[in-house]
View 1 (tube, one colour):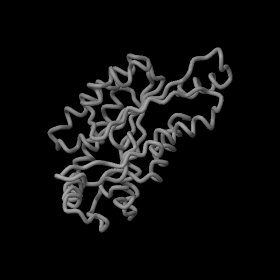
View 2: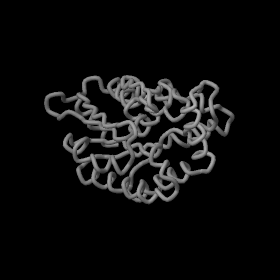
View 3: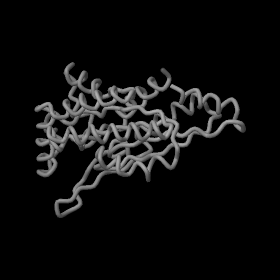
Length: 240
């Protein structure tokens, strides 16, 4: 990708080349949300730990390769976000920073809209991809992790166990599968490369790995260690 060449050029010519900007647009996984807890009155909140999200990890890898390059990171993940919301806030949260590369990751929350919501999801993704490209940013679409397939024994709250049943139904009924396939088709239409982390999670599940236990909240947030998988897959795409 041109992005890596810009990093290398900045490393070699610190005063003559501009800084390089890498942006991330997505939901709670992008933001760096992990465990969740009840706040009372039926409310929920999450443990925020952005230092351990994949965005910081891939930035660390890139800085290791080009330590002399100034790399600016725009972290625009928001817990609970969806592709239509991401498109609505693109002008505020991403475009003013003129990123050289933007990683987009949506699907987990969008899939809650059921099969009828796929059109809204893909329309929003296409708008995001197109607007970023027109602004001069390279774009990567990264597919998310899978959600839980079963109700973990670590979930004791009735609220969390109910959420686990709901999310497992989305997985078992192939709803999230349908969203991801539609997203990949949209990315291909727009000429956007796909880093297919979802396929890796599906592969682990098919091989017998209990992927539910690889989720820090046992629902939909990967553990801190699993964020390294996202980071390395992104780095491989960037390196080419």
